[in-house]
Image 1 (tube, helix red, strand yellow):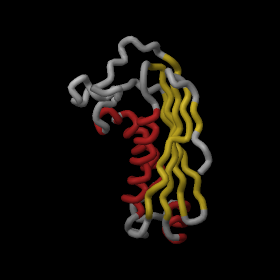
Image 2: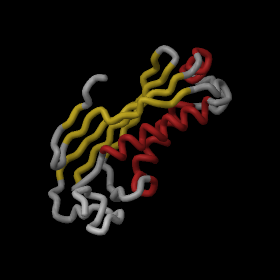
Image 3: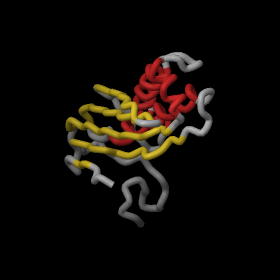
Length: 158
């Protein structure tokens, strides 16, 4: 019925069979931004937020989320990740979150990196909302990926 990989011949959703694929080293990097008031950013930067270590907690939340991606996103394969990093860049009235995931497997990395960024951003919001309820989470995107059948890919600047 369809050439879409997540649909069977009758159009029903299915998990893609990756059994015949070769394992390759795969990496993916994703990013996102949370915009906030200068006061909220300064409290987070200085470690004076009411809920404590906001950046440290968001880093752990992002790493945990990457490991749980298959439980959160339907049809994603459970993967044994080799490495997950979650880093922050403090900008003018914003924090940029970057997550990189790597593993050797038959599939994966992109959704795990994007899930890490998403949950880290939501954790930043949760831990900073006492300072600024008007924070805006957005611009979540895949920045790059390597490995797999489609090989290397890098986002175009937009």
